[in-house]
Image (cartoon, rainbow, N blue to C red):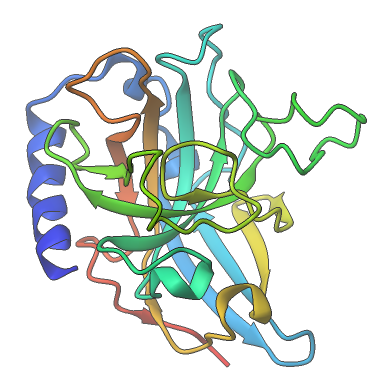
Length: 241
């Protein structure tokens, strides 16, 4: 994990000074400038409460649709953690376990959940919702990270039953996400993360993008990092109790 973080920090500096991402610039505002992150365990409800506070209004900015899956923009408030992949239902594999709160109007990847409660389970992508993902180093994209992919015929891969059916280490757990002023919050029941209450974490605001056509790019890559709570993705924060 240290190697991945080192590469990420170096890439973060390079991408902010050299690379151009026209779409990324459209969302570089105070709504993605992180002021504070926190994860607090509430024993009375056997859950952890995850929060990101920003300078502006959390969740107010959502991506503009492009009308197709390829090139579809995704905005995210992401908690990289020291959790193990097996804690959240994956097989053991290299990478960073992260809880990503995302919005993307061009597609829906939570087929079990109807986030806007309109009885249509396939039109909710723009509503902020959570994913467990495994992030891995990826020099093919400006942000230096992508969601880890796998061969769909690989029988060693284990995904939670709530996964969206994509050949990536991604789950759609359906946890409640709320936005209120400058804060975005998600509540995770203890049993949904192996009852782990002692782990480290950080907070990152990012622009991601789907790729279904270019073989030299990942399916889901990080193209721009708007802010990092710690400044260096060192995962310095611990769960409050």
